[in-house]
Image 1 (tube, helix red, strand yellow):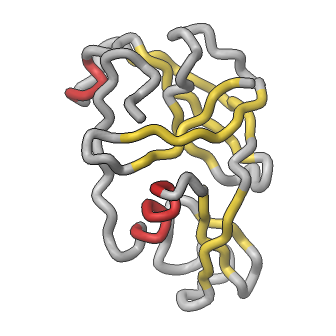
Image 2 (image 1 turned 90 degrees about the horizontal axis):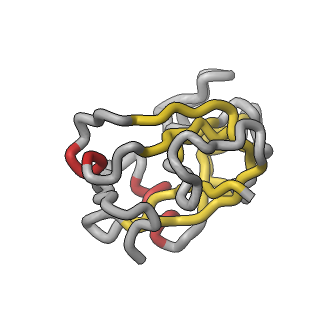
Length: 142
């Protein structure tokens, strides 16, 4: 499934040992976050130890719905990221997850014209494919 944003050539993330479970789940169109079983805190991006309690061996991967809202956005008109240049101007919005307001993601908001972002609007999770075939989470306003 190519990008819904014309001209956008998504850079592909390079999974490592820490992030591989996250990216593998994305390829299955699921969003998972690290969850510390010692203090029940969700983590994103993945971490080596819990930022709340310091536990380093108490993480499990927990599926989340990915529902959230648009916190703030900006429009990129002069990106240094080659794959974004032909799609400019392009939105970059901070998405706050409803399941944990401390977890934020960036999204291009496919389907939302640049600069027409409804701040505070609810969003739903979707997945888009990068140039390598890796799926990445994105959100669209609903």
